[in-house]
Structure formats: structure tokens, C-alpha cells
Length: 219
Image (tube, one colour):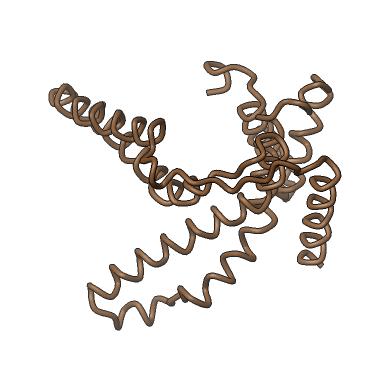
């Protein structure tokens, strides 16, 4: 993927993190997610210090940092409302109850990811664009699942080559529907949180607050 797409900041981050993780495994070291992210950032900054001003670079690393630092806390918080069930409890539940639990489990995990990422991205979005898209909170609940379905159609067409023409036609209509929904969302649901005077000082203060919260959680 890195060779085909090229050294975009987000792609380079993924490539470096995966490479450092594999090197750590080969050296029999226990890799830590935050250390891998820091090494990937250091590599990109050494290669091109000016990439730090790239919005894609900032969004990519902040979203990953938010996911690493705040996902466990958000998942634990959401367990209050969508509790975890062990195998023994699941074995005593009906099929409809198990299905409902799987849906709630998926919803809890997805909401935890969305909250963790957006906690970190909120200041950078307000600083650069002076608005935060509230619709993205809803779209992130089902758009990744929809894109996974598109990939499922693609791999199925490769496995069932004689039927690939019809399978790819279905995949094409489904993917076009998703892209149209993303590019042209319903105007009624397109809402933003506006803040026109989000200064650099406010961004730094928010980031510093997040840093101390994440450090206190680790301790």
C-alpha cells in the first residue's frame, strides 16, 4: 500500500509503525503503541521537518494518539450503559438476546473509538477550520461497516470469478451510494459546531490538558 500510494503523512505513519513493530518482534522486544507512534513521528520529522505544518500529518498522529490514550477509558465508561457479558452468561441467553448483545457490543466499541479520536481532533479542527462536523459522529457508526461490505464484495468476486461480473456490479452500486452519501449528505443533518476565535494559545492549552489527563490515567 505504501509503495502504490506514496509517502503521504498518514501512509508513512502506518508504514513506519508497522515496520518498527515487526523489528521489535524480531528483536524480541515488547512494543508499546505510543512508542511506535512516537518513533514514526520522529522518522517523518527527521525526513522532512516542514511536514509538521501539514494538516494531514497533524490529524493522523493526533487521531492515533487519542485512540491509544483514551479508547480504554471511553470503553470502560460505556460499559456502564452497555455492559460486557462473559461466555457463561452468553450460553444462558436466547439467540435474540445474543444478537442484541452483539449489536450493543459493536455499538460500544464503535462509540468508544469515535469519542477517543474526536477528543483529540476537536482542537485541531477548530483551530484550522473553525468548525467541527457533528454529522461525522453519526457517519462513523456505519460508514466503516459499509466500506467493509464493499471490500467483502471485492474479495468474493475474486474467489467466485465466474460470477464476478454480477458481484462487482452490486459492489459498484453500493460503493457509489456510500460515496454519494459522504459527498452530498442530507442538508437537514449537516450540522457544525462553530468557533471562529479558537486561537493557537487555546489549542496548546487544550493539548496540554489532554496530555496531563493521559499521563494521570497511565499512572
